[in-house]
Image (tube, rainbow, N blue to C red; front, side, top):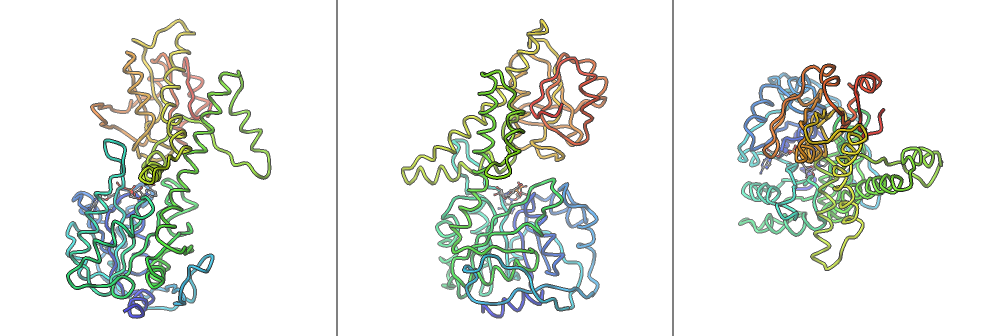
Length: 459
Ligand SMILES: NC(=O)c1ccc[n+]([C@@H]2O[C@H](COP(=O)([O-])OP(=O)(O)OC[C@H]3O[C@@H](n4cnc5c(N)ncnc54)[C@H](O)[C@@H]3O)[C@@H](O)[C@H]2O)c1
C-alpha cells in the first residue's frame, strides 16, 4: 500500500483534497495543483466553493488568473515534476529537498471545489486547513478539526494519507484524530492501510519572498511509514521539508514559533511602557540595540496583536499545560501586556487632545488602517477595532480609512471607510495610525493632520 501510494505521488497520478479553503487552504490547494496533482477543495462556505469553480480568488496573495488557469477544462500537457527519494525514516535527516525531475503526462483542469465530503472516497490524500479558534471561555475550540476528522473517517479507505495543517496543541493528531480514524468498521491500521501526519502552515499573508512553496515545512508522522508517505505527497509542492520524529513535535514547533513572536512583541510593548515612565524614546533604544550584530533580534511595539495566529495560538499551549497542572507564565504575561496596548494608545489620544485643550468626548478622530497588519485586508483580532471601540466608549466620533477594507461589520459596529482621505485629515481633531499600509504617504499625512498618535512609529 505504502509503495503504491508513493508511486502515485511521484508520478502525480494522485487525487488530493484540501479541507478548508481559507488563507492557508487555498494557497496550499493551488500549490498542489501547480505541482500536477488533481485537487479538490472542500469547504462548507458555498461562496468560496462557487468562486473557485468560477476561477476566482478571494485571497489577496492568490491572483484570480492563477486559479482560473488551474480550473480551466482539461487539456493534456506535459509537466516536469520533482520526486522525493523513497528512503526509510527521514526523521533522522535535517531537511529533505526535491530531487530528480522526470516528465509525466497530466491533464490540466487540476483544481475544483465542492461542499461534498463524498469526494474523499476517490482521494489518495487530504490536507486539513480548518480554523482553530478559542471558544467563549478562551479555551481551544477543536470542533472544526473534529468535524473534518469525522467526515474523513466516513470515507476512510486503504491508501489514504491525511495531513493536519491547522495550528493546535501537542497531542491533537494522536489523541483527537487518530482514535476517530482507527475506530473504523474495516479495522484499517495507521501506518499500514492509511497514513496520518501533522505539518503546520507557516504562511505569512501579504508576503511575496516566502510563500507556501518555498518556506521550509516541518512534518511529523504517526509512524515512520506515515512520515515517508506524507513527505512524498508534500515534496511535490513544497521545496524543503523538515522531518521531525512525531506529530507532537511538529505541533509544538508551530506553537514555539508563534509563542516566540508573542513573547518578544510583549517585551517590545513593555519596553515602550517602561521608556514612557523613564522619558525615553523606545524606538531609539530598539534601533540602537539592533545594531548589535549577534544575540539580538529586533521586535517593535505597536497597537497590540492581531491576526488568527499570534494572539490565539499560544493559548492552545497554555491550555494544554494547564491540564498538566503547569502555568505557562511567559505566554500569560505576554498576552496580558499585548492585550492592554489598545488601552495604552487610547490614553495617548486622550493625552494629546488634552494638551490641545480638547476632550475625547465630542472630538472627531480618524483611525488609519483597520487591518491587523500592513497591506492586507484581514481584520481578525485587529487591535484597531479595540481602539475604535474604546474611543467610542469615551464619546469620540470615530471615522476610519483603510485602502484594503472599504467597509466592515464587527460586534455591533458597522463602518464604511471615508472616501476622501484629504478632507477627513483636515476635518478631524486627531489621527491615529493603527496600520502602516504601504499605500499611505506619511509625510503628507503628518503635514495635513492637526494631531497624530502613531502606534506604528511611521511618522
Ligand atoms: N492565516 C494565517 O496566516 C495562518 C498561518 C499559519 C497557520 N494558520 C492556521 O491554519 C488554520 C486555518 O487558518 P486560516 O487562516 O486558513 O482560516 P480561514 O478561516 O481563512 O479558513 C478556514 C476555512 O475552513 C472552512 N471550514 C471550516 N470548517 C470546515 C469543515 N468542517 N469542512 C470544510 N471546511 C471548513 C471555512 O469555511 C474557511 O473557509 C488555523 O488553524 C490557523 O491557526 C493560519
